[in-house]
Length: 171
Ligand code: OFO
Image (cartoon, rainbow, N blue to C red; front, top):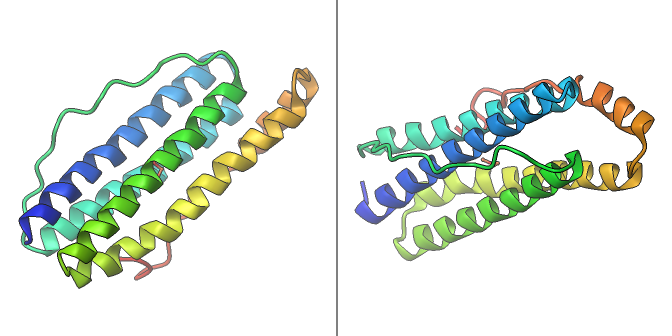
């Protein structure tokens, strides 16, 4: 496997684990505040992130590389409001999108076609990741300080379920 790609993909695997860790922290924050719907939304997000982790894992292995795990960076544990947590989520997803774009740039420079095709799935996925978080930010801004509004949104977020991609999609 191209060594630069191997190293960069291992770093991204770590970043995806870090994302899961961040959302686990947010899930705990919401669940202990009795906002179980918000907690559920974050738990589904963890599953999304673990899917991303395993996609990088499989690609590295399939290309004959080595998976090398590094420590996962610390994450925040408290947010002042649900809005601030979702603003942080949106910001984080924009950061991850930037990382994916950098990986794409590297793959093009290294003329690694398999990596380019693999990363295309992530480019599309990040559009959805950003949009989903931004939608919640906008809803929470609309709700403002409304307790009933928060209650209704919490019920709605309790309905979120993890939907794995169809077999073969982006594999
Ligand atoms: Fe893996 O997309 Fe979010 O972080």
